[in-house]
Length: 120
Image (cartoon, rainbow, N blue to C red; front, side, top):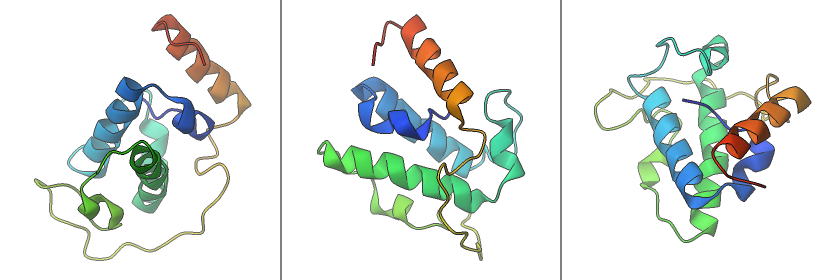
């Protein structure tokens, strides 16, 4: 499980984009707080940050003609098998959304994609 660097979202091949949506959906739901080496940093931030990141992915999906469930556009929605947040404080959008997504992380993501045969 990995969140791709946000600069790559618009360039991801179909499989990686849709996989990113599934992974974020899992993290927003019952996967929140469950240890995973590649995404542990997400849990040090508000779940609202993950929602903001998900919005980037959802927007890219829509730009390619996909129709994600509108419920994912609600910040308190956590999936169909997890109760929604009763309240979730909004945070200002930062760039990058996650400070961990720096230039070094971008290089790591490009190398990871390259190892899968994806050249961007």
